[in-house]
Image (cartoon, rainbow, N blue to C red; front, side, top):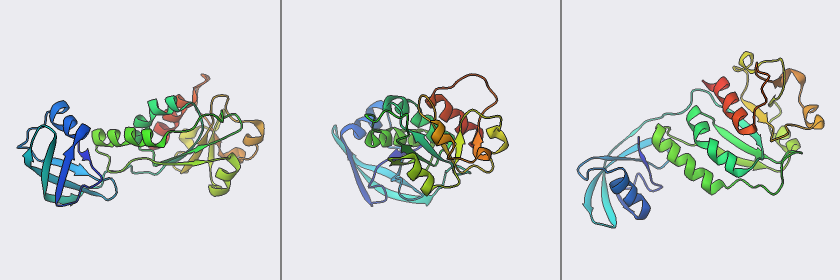
Length: 223
């Protein structure tokens, strides 16, 4: 674990209790004589704390130093992801954070099942844990939009990931925003709303599920 998340990291004195207390000293087995490094994920600093006193239920810590330490992706990538089963999103979100995706906007497209709603609170917990493990000094920004048209209006330079001989690897330097379909892909009407030069695919004849495709396109663009 590269750091511990706490929303109050930066305060001179910090108290941890409950599950976080148990996680640090029972699961991760931190020695109380060790420094513990925290981030609040709102600024770029990492904060070093020392244990002042500890008991079975809580620990009081004191700030002894801090420094700006920015560990973020070298390139920004915003993905518009047509809504799929939230459980599938939850399985991939940590990997996407570690690959370096900047932002995900969940979009209700024509083939999206409207009963599905992303659980932002759960996703943010998974993202925080991912950044703690990987050292990334921020997490993926999450957003949602209720229509494909609204997304395109806000991001007119969007690329589309779909079946195409225009391979994504040839366009990776140009892509800042890309939209990905749900199970069943895009409707003909949605495809026609994107200029054909901005429809990109991969050199494969194997159909990928949406949750596989998002990791594929992210890796091809960012890594």
